[in-house]
Length: 444
Image (cartoon, rainbow, N blue to C red; front, side, top):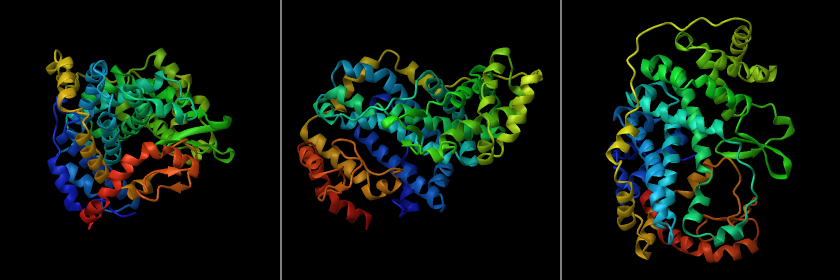
């Protein structure tokens, strides 16, 4: 798989990363940074997949930009929670959902990049004090995962989607993002617990005894939200950012998503520092013991370290755990979200009104410029090679075998779907085709 960035381009992009104010979410400069992050994210995954020099990671660490990523992740969450409800009242997406969608997708892009880089110990260390804010964000994602049922399979209804406009269309477009983001947050929690020795003591204490992280992870093992009944009643599991049908021969195979939960629990129970700090009660002990019935030989063959966890859980069932080691810890609190909400506490409505006037401008020229920018950002052939599943029809959602011969961006299952979708697809097709020579020239 070919690189999308050279090391020098990646260094330039990383050097330019900065924290934005909430009111500038969606602005032209913010969108430019989103482009940088998207390309850095794709390149990071290419490097990881090819096992080549991970220069994106090196630049993020050396330029001390991982705290910036964490700030932008949380700022997007605050925008989503505080500003978006005010924007909905102003019907801000009536003419175009392009920029609003990118504001939501920004959160997914950043957490995907963080998931890739935080696999490495030096990236966790480079988080600095921001690791507390990141841990808080991820823990809240786990709380949400524990509170939901697995998303049900819904057969695509292209006709209904075509009739959607404005906020209704936007919310249909973003409906899968929260689950995908929460799954990536689970992986980040695992990487943080892999590196307990590098975490500030206050961060570890807060995860263990304020949020009771073992109690949050246990339900993800005993009642996993990433397993469901899918199309035609067949079981499905969520991994590689998509729901995948599980064949009978693969039902006992541990997916990457499932492994993240198991390995997090292993770290929390087996790590000596966690064992010293964790405060057992009858309630959390009983919650943790619920995973006993989910151990089996096939699981341990795939993740041998769980054999040790299994023995520890069995011992926990018949004896009282030792009390935590007492120590004085100066409690630190997450600051980024608190500060953003404090600064803007009386401004949410004003920010929404400003963004309607200055950011989410739905005139034809602005939409054309944004479409061109997106066409230049997303190198379709590279992104396609990263997809874990076969393409789906842009009209009905079924597996696709035909491709738009002009832009080569959209897929269809049959000629009829392509003809019916042309009215919707032709504008974007035209923009992509017009900008293809520029993209090729830039890549050369």
